[in-house]
Image (cartoon, rainbow, N blue to C red; front, side, top):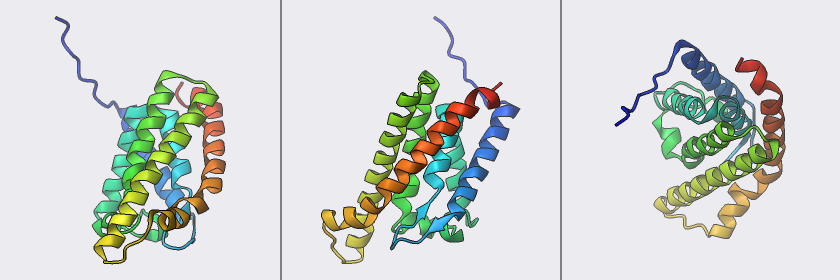
Length: 184
């Protein structure tokens, strides 16, 4: 039997995770209000971080970012923080970031092909949309304001498709250019 070795984070990993969480927070500060859910650069930051550093470091970076915001640091969009943001209308999108990082990171760990990275980013953002939209509907139904799925999609997904595709393209190109230089 081969013993399973637990791989721990080394100093370099911890630095990458800290810097990555900071990058995501800075990306959250760039917001364009579009109704209840603002357009931010968070998804660009998450795709970039997970694409550069892989599933383990990328996902832990997102978890660190979320935990920092959950304890009250104003790192979410609109300089907000606290559990109330996670329990609010946009909380599902924030939780969806974890799965976006996992999907992009796993793909990045397995291949360096740009087309695969692009597809994983689209898939990761789609999963984030699914979590966010479901959570948004749950929050509104809890407030006794039933909202149809079509109306929710028109409010929470459709306005973000083009901006997210642009962010995905930028993130994939940056990962493609920077990965070998940063990870030397």
